[in-house]
Image 1: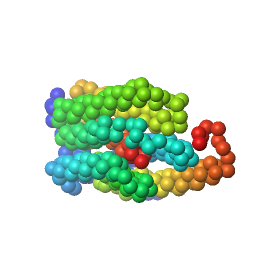
Image 2: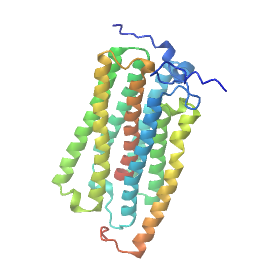
Image 3: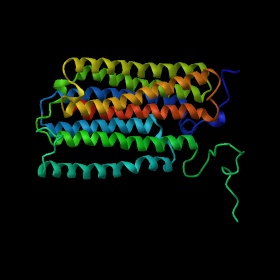
Image 4: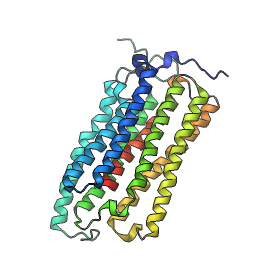
Length: 119
Length: 204
C-alpha cells in the first residue's frame, strides 16, 4: 500500500485557501501566544493585587487562550458560518445561564444556611 | 418539483460532503461538534457549582496556597504542546503521510499520558497532605472538576491510540482524513477545557 495516498481533492478549505506552509506557521504562532499567556497568567496570579482585578485579568487571558484554540487548532476560523454559529450561539446562552445561577446562588446563600456550605 | 441536491444524490452510504450549511464538514464532524457543545455545558455546570460554593464561603482558601501552580503550569504547557502535535498529525494526514500521521498521534497520546501521570502524582501529594475529597467544599469541587477532565484526557489518549493504530493499518486517511480531524477536535477540546479549569480552579 502506498504511504502517500492521494488526498488532493480532499484538502480542507483552509489548506486550499492558505496552503500548508502558512497553516504550519499559524499553528506555531498560536503555540507562542498560548505559552506567553500561560506564563503571564501564572505571573499575574503571583502578584499581590486586588482579587477582583486579578480575576478579570485571568479570565480575560483564559478566554483569549480558549478562543485561539477554538479558532485556529479546531479550525473554526476557516469553517463555514453555519458550523461557527453552531459552536458560538450556545456560549452567550451559557453566560446567561451562569449569571442566573450565580444570582440565584448568591440569593440562597444570603437567605438560608445551606447544610453543605461551611461558613 | 425541484431536483435533489448533489449531496443527497451521493452514492448509497456515502457521506454528503457539501451540504450548504456546513460547507465541507462531514456528518461525523458536525456530530462531534454537537457532542462537544453539550460536553462544554457539563463542564460549565461543574465550574458554576465551584464558583457558587466559593462565592458563598469567605473562608475559601486561596488555591495557590494549597495547589502546586508551577507544576500544574508545566502540565498545562505539555497539554498545549500536545495540541500542536495533533495539528501536525492532521497536517500529515491531509498529505497522506501515513507514518508521520501515526507518529504525531502517538506523540500527542504521550503528552496526554504525561498529563495523566502528573495528575496522579498531584492527587497523591495532595491526599498525603490531608487534602481529601470529604475534607471540605474546596477539595470536593477540585477533585470532581479535575477528575472529570482527567477522564476526558484518558478517553482522548485511548481515542488517539486507536486512531494511530488504525492509520498504521491503512485506515482513516481517506475522505479528507476525516477521522483524524474528528479525533483532533476532541483532543483540542480537552486542551481548551483545561485552559479554563486551570484558570478558574488553580489561579483565581
